[in-house]
Amino acid sequence: MDARDQMRDPCYKVVGNGGAFKRSLLLSALSYLGFETYQVISQAALVRAAATVFRVEEILEQADYLYESGETEKLYQLLTQYKESEDAELLWRLARASRDIAQLSGTSEEEKKLLVYEALEYAKRALEKNESSFAAHKWYAICISDVGDYEGIKAKIANAYTIKEHFEKAIELNPKDATSIHLMGIWCYTFAEMPWYQRRMANVLFAAPPSSTYEEALGYFHRAEQVDPNFYSKNLLLLGKTYLKLHNKKLAVFWLMKAKDHPAHTEEDKQVQTEAAQLLTGFSDKS
Image 1 (cartoon, helix red, strand yellow):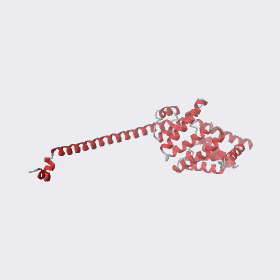
Image 2 (cartoon, rainbow, N blue to C red; image 1 turned 60 degrees about the vertical axis):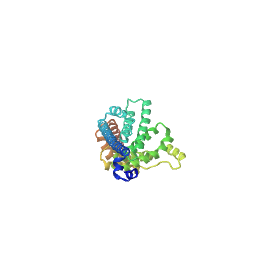
Image 3 (cartoon, rainbow, N blue to C red; image 1 turned 90 degrees about the horizontal axis):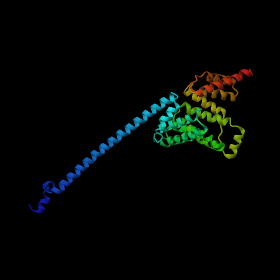
Image 4 (tube, one colour; image 1 turned 90 degrees about the vertical axis):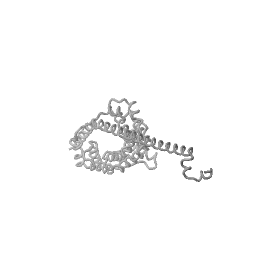
C-alpha cells in the first residue's frame, strides 16, 4: 500500500497514524480529568456555601435568643465578631445591638455617640446587601433618626424625609410588622407636635417641610395594635397621649389604663407605666 492508499484507508487514520491517535487520546483524557476536577471543585464550593449558610443561620438563632432574653451586652459581643459579614440579616441585627448598647445607662456620652454612628454604618451596609429586607429599611431609618440628635435641627428635619421613606418601605415589604407601623405613627406624632419655632425654621429652610397631624399618627398606632394587640407598651401610651391631644378624654383614659397595666418586662415598660400613671393622676386632680 503506497502512501496515498494509506491516507485513504480509514483504518490507517485511526490506527496507522499513531502519533495523532495518541495525541487525541491524551487530549480526551485531559478533558475528562478537567471535567472531573471541575465537578470536585464545584461540589466543594457548594459544600462550603451550604456550611456558610448553616453557620449564619446558627448565629442568627443565637442572636435572636439573646435579644429575646434581654442579654444586650452578650448579643453585641457575639455579633461584633462578624462585623465584616456580607449578610444583611446579621448586619441589621448588629445595628440594633449597637444602638441598644448606646442606650444603656452605663454607656458614656462619648461612647454612645460612637455607637450611634457605628449602628448607622451597619444598617446602611445591611440595606446595600439586601434592599428587599424590611428590617434593614426599618433599622436604617431608626439609626438616621438617632444620628440627627448630634447633627442639629436642620439636619434632623432634612433627614425626616429619608426616615419616612424607609419606614413606609418597611411597611410595604412587611405589612404585618407592627413595630414599623408604630414607628411611622411616632414620625407623624413628632411632626404634629413640632414646636412653633422649629416649624418656623423648617418653613425658612425647606420649600415643603415635613408635616403631619395627630389624626394620621392615631391611624398608625391603631393599625399597629390591630396587627399585633398589646405588642408594645409605648404604643398603648401613645394612643392615650394622642387622644389627649385630640381632646377625647374617655378614650385617652382607656388607653392610658392599658399602658399602666401592661406587664413591665423592660426598663422602658417601667417608664411607660410611670408616665401613664402620672397622666391618669392628672385627670383625677382636675376632676
